[in-house]
Image (cartoon, rainbow, N blue to C red; front, side, top):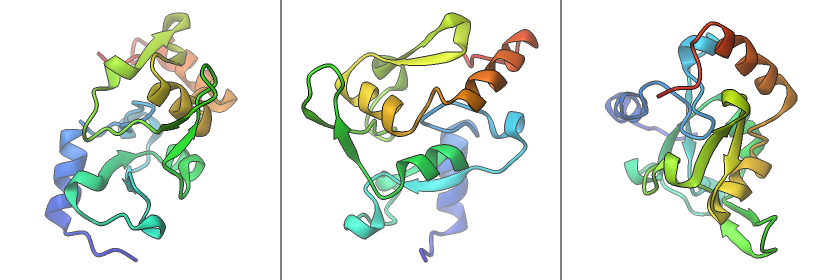
Length: 139
């Protein structure tokens, strides 16, 4: 178990505006705290360094598991998952269908959408409700 300082945890969450840095869901909407994801999994040598930590919802963290790369559906080549510490979300993803779906714009985005199941049926249904209330998508 990691021993990440409370100040580091808070900084990661504040920097992420309390949103999952992968699916952009607000902890306020899901009613659950976000957790810290190791971008490079600890089991593969990742550290507790700030540069290796991302705010994540439980679902994205669960689907990501101890992985950091996948096969790009467009090129068939291996690509790293989106890294919220070094990459800008809007350059790798876009909202589609009025905000109910996330589309990967780059190899990094595409492998992340597939591996983390960013458009799983449950979150797509929830996004539809959030859109109706004008709570989603985030700006």
